[in-house]
Length: 130
Image 1 (spheres, rainbow, N blue to C red):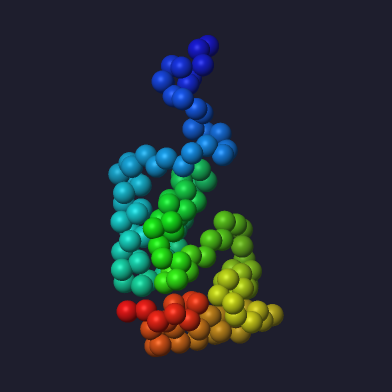
Image 2 (cartoon, helix red, strand yellow; image 1 turned 90 degrees about the vertical axis):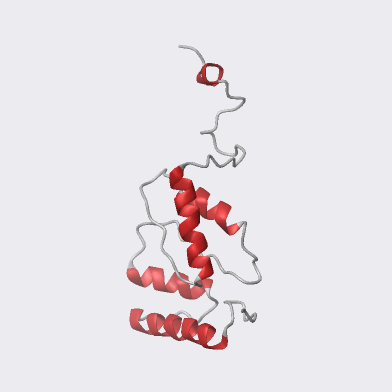
C-alpha cells in the first residue's frame, strides 16, 4: 500500500501529535466559532460537548487564542467523567474560590462570585469590563 502522505500530497501526517495546528474551516468549525463568539459578545457561559476526536479541544484552543486574557477567563475541563461535586470543586479552583466539601456550598459560592462579577462589571481577574 502506498504511503497516504504521498497519495494525498501531504507534507506531514496531520494525525500525529505535535503537528502544526492548521484549522480546516469546515462548516462545523465556522459554526462552533460563531457560537463561541456569540457567547463572548453576550458575556455568556457555555458548555462545549461532542464525541471524542471531533475537535472540541482544538476549536477551544483556537478560539481562546483570539481572546484578551485580561478580559476573559477560559476554563478547560477535559474529563468527561467528572461528577457534579468534582465539577464544582474544579470550577471553584479555576475561579480562585475557596473549595468546600459540600456540593451546595460550592454551587452557592460559584453563583455568588459570578453574580458579583456581573454586578460589578468585572472579569474573573477583577478587571473592569464594558
